[in-house]
Image (cartoon, rainbow over all chains, first blue to last red; front, top):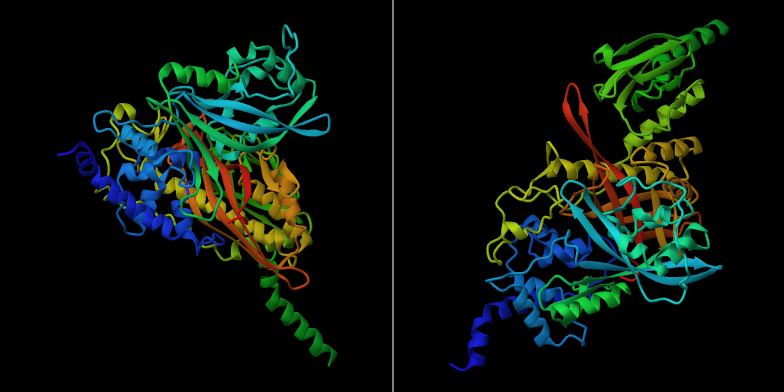
Length: 293
Length: 341
């Protein structure tokens, strides 16, 4: 049999499942989302949080989609492959279909399936922060990642400061804090991503001790010291986070970006906006670029 | 003729007296008490008797003419516990809830018939509101429907992470240290608190409710939250991002002044993982849709649909009699407009 035929037969089940799934999902694209009683279907399929993205990627037994299906006395008959395929933004022309399929097959490889854990340290949230500087709104991206420990719990930490023209590096030898650093007294909660890192608004102020929120390596950099100094001197004030983009580096051979697509379609919410093939050494390079270090 | 009028008035007064008295009796009001700070309740008349409906060693109470001081005798006092107070010709019943966290609402002034009546009316209004639409998410059936899907992740790569409290062996339970709780019960408690918040919001928006009742509703709603000083609400509107303390947000709702308002919540989504936090508490969040309907002053129907994400904090404490206890509290709220949809 020709290799192309073999390939088609091997993945026939996946293709059929995906087509059924997409027919259901895309068939109801025109619905609008006004009240919860009329648009439950939209709410059910929308990937509402990044946690839901992860549970759908992993095809978690307790996922919201599964529970919703069970509540409606329907079995979730879509394969994990179909679920991951549905996490790709179908309107994104920059991801060729062949790359999507390769990514799906790699993640669901029977011999070595890939999963995402919330506590993985190698995925990052790029929070576009709106600060007020000299009476003007300016955007400074902060890059955060999860630090998880079975005994100490989970929290977010700031691991990088993205490219911006508002922080000018200065020679600050030592940062002085009003309050001492007591481990785990203050932290960015592990739930904060779902609330657009709202706790940073209270955290960033003249009384802040940056050691609670910034990774030690980042705190050594002049750029970070300069930002912290500006916060301590009340020269810059955080208004809030306007949007968040997630970058996943833990899946072998790929870097995946996830963004929020706010639209009245079943394929909406947190979806894959970019997939890039990447070797381990290239990932290191890309990560340094993201963290701006 | 005059005698007949006086007699009729006396009979009428005697018949109506129990109703009047009942309308000034507090029943089932909750008081959050701790060992470190006493609650003080002021009544219109002298206190004649106080009965604690649990062992006396749990709570200390000192009646002083019209004032009653109550505090927990130990940080592990039995909770909840009822206390019955007789003053004047009235009988009041309060429910004491032990709360070892910071309590700011400790002075309860019902020192006049008017104040007492306002409180009774407030409690009546709060309890009489119809329950909002039930959350559509029901507990998962025990026979899981995973029939035609990919293999489950191996245990060393299980989706529930190291700090997750969801049992990998049985997803219907959550393990909080030494304590195991049912997920259904956890979700029910959160749903109850969110429904109470929606009821309180309905009272605040309704301009037909007296100002005193609406003010008391703000205080009552604040008790649903983890910490009334740091909890914030963030709204992204036309003027950009606005973040304010939850109490300010609730007080602003009073300015809306709608008639026949209804605040309904639905599509509650509980996240799968509740995680241990560095301070020893457990946290998660819920996302739900809230629909506010009402009629504005000029009889224009109003409808507002928003998506809300609320931080949930679970606290666990030791109770001498009942062992490990736990409860859920609401935290920061993110309000997002759904008008684009």
